Each structure stands twice: as C-alpha cells, then as structure tokens.
Amino acid sequence: MGDPRTGAAARVGQRIRALRTARGMSLTALAATAGIGKGSLSELETGRRNPTLDTLYSVAGPLGVPMAELVGDGEWTRLDENGISTTRVRVVREESRVTEVYLIRLAPGAVRRSPAHAAGAVERLVVLTGSGTVAYGGQRSELAGGDCVEFPADQPHSYTGSPDGGFEAVDVIVTPRA
Amino acid sequence: MGDPRTGAAARVGQRIRALRTARGMSLTALAATAGIGKGSLSELETGRRNPTLDTLYSVAGPLGVPMAELVGDGEWTRLDENGISTTRVRVVREESRVTEVYLIRLAPGAVRRSPAHAAGAVERLVVLTGSGTVAYGGQRSELAGGDCVEFPADQPHSYTGSPDGGFEAVDVIVTPRA
DNA sequence: ATAAGGTGTTCCGTATTCGGAACAGGATAG
DNA sequence: CTATCCTGTTCCGAATACGGAACACCTTAT
Image (cartoon, each protein chain N blue to C red):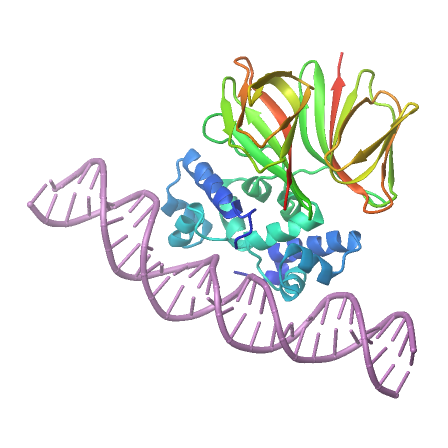
C-alpha cells in the first residue's frame, strides 16, 4: 500500500466525487444506479478504499464517462480547483533516479506553487500553448508557446498562467535518489 | 458480479499479457518489477481476478503504458512495430500551429526513422531513461537520461536506442500552419 | 415540537484479493 | 538419467473490499 503512486485511490475518488456532484447526483442515487453499496461509494470517494476494476466500471457507466477518464492519466483529464490541472502521464523508477512526466494546465492568472523537491532535482518545462512565467530562487523566466526551460527544483518554485489564455506545458521532473 | 472471465477483468488481463509478451518479459520478471506476487499476476492475466486500482497501477508502470491504455476505452493512437512504441499523449490545435506530445520507447538498437514534417516544424526531446542518438541533417546528437534537445523537424530525422537498454523519451512536435 | 425524508458516514460479517510458498512442466547441462 | 534453472500455475493464511444496516446530521412539513 505504501506505494508512492497510491495517491491513485485518493485521486480517482476525488474525480468521481467531482463528476458526481457536477451532475447533481447524490451519493445515494449514484450508488443505487451503479448497483453498489453506498458505504462502498462513500469510502471510495473519500479515498479510503482501493477499488476493484468491477467497482470502477460500475460507477463509470452511470457517470457517463469512459474508464480512461476516471483513472485519467490519458488525454484530457481532471480540472482541479483553481483553474489548475496536473496530470501525471508517466513515472520511471530507476536505481539512481525517478523521472516523472506531468501535463500542466493553468487558467489565465492561475498560480501553481510547488515546494522544494529533493536535493538535486531538476525540472524541464516545454510550453505547448499560451504563455506564462516560471519563478525559482530569485530568477523569473517568461515563457511562450514552444519555449523550453530547465531549472533546479530543489527550491520552492511557481508557475503563473498569463492573464490572457493561461498556458499548458509538459513538465519533466528528474529526482536523484540515494 | 458475472463471471470475471467474461467481463472487464478478462479484457484487461488479456491486454496485460499481450503487452508483457510483446516486450519479451516473463511473468515472473514483470511481477517482480511491479512489486506484486506472481500468483496475483498469473490469475490477473488469466482473468480469474478482479484487480484493484493499486495492482493495475503497479503493472502499468513497468509496462510503460498509462492506466487509460490498460483499461483501454479511451482514444489512443498507438503504433507498435519492431521494438518501437509511440503513444500520442496530447494534441493541441491552435490557429497558428499544432502541438503534439508523444511518449517514445525504443528497444535496444531499434531505429525509428521519421520523414520531414511540414516546413518550420520543430521537435523537442526530453530523455526519460536510457540513452540513444538523434540524427537530423548532417547532425548527430548523443542523448542520455535527463537530456533535452531541440532540432528542426522539417527534414528527415531518426532516433536510435542505445544497444544497452534502449531509451524512452517525451517528444514534443510543434508544427506551424498557414 | 415532532415527524418524515433527504444528505453522507461509520460499522460489521462475508467474500475475495493479496503476496508468497509449493507445485508442475520444459529446456539445458553435465 | 539427474540436477539446475527457467517458465507459469495452483493453493493458502492474512488482509481488505464488498453490500447493507445503523447512524448522525440537516431541511422541510405537519
């Protein structure tokens, strides 16, 4: 269980709850039409359970979304609260380092703050659309579509979507390990 | 719940076995790198089990595919030839350009040749694991884990996985349009 | 004030998934 | 032929996901 990627259960749970409330369904109603216990759905949505494939399919149907959107590491995925959307596309674990690939979308004006990662961590950002800024240490870089920056991530840093259009980028984080 | 053998569990199990064998991995090896019991994997692949989210994520990682591809009801462009795997993760269409994000995996020694893209097209490659080379025009760049290159893609180019371990990379292609 | 109907949560007994051990078969070597 | 090392399968005790009942809370009606 202690698997680091097991924010998975919590992530999927949050997404299900988001989809359900967005459709104005009650937990009770969704559980009924999905044919699962409402206790199961409650604990599923709050991330206290590690659902089985069957259970996930049971809720995907009534919600009207393909499974791929529920687990959501594919194409368009979750819109987090404040216009910030982060999707982890890929994780590679090696003896010497861990490499993670994220797709980040920032609504106009949205700011995503990130604490310092492990010592020696490096981030590379390739902007897909729009523009924005990246701040780290005292530095501050302006980014536009197609730009590519590289910066140390072992210090607090932040991304800001430009007021007109925000931006979307691929973020690759390489973290060395002991 | 119906017979797991004929349901979603069976489909996902078959897909996992197909992906595993396509990569030349043994069941034992995949179970080990995924950190799950081999009995679990065996029964999973033969559709006798109804796997949990954690278990699915555990195998998706080593197989090098996003979860969405495992459960497989999302849209995925995926070409699989001899040791070459290309997955389109994201496409952004704007008035001025089209941006595509691919995840590329090359088996040891495999070569992926790409014809010239539209005039003005640019590619950016961030290597996740392993190493290899990129050739374009007369140029030739050596790449290792974590490296990031940028090169014009409006001419034929090719990637080669190093003989020991091949490589995996994120490829971002920006194509301008009239 | 009390009841009725809704929300989502916590709890419990049962069923099943989990990792690991023991197992059966195939290939290769000595 | 036997030993060794693979392959993948079946089995088992322990952990846990399952459905459903009981629960707490809020809103509205009588």
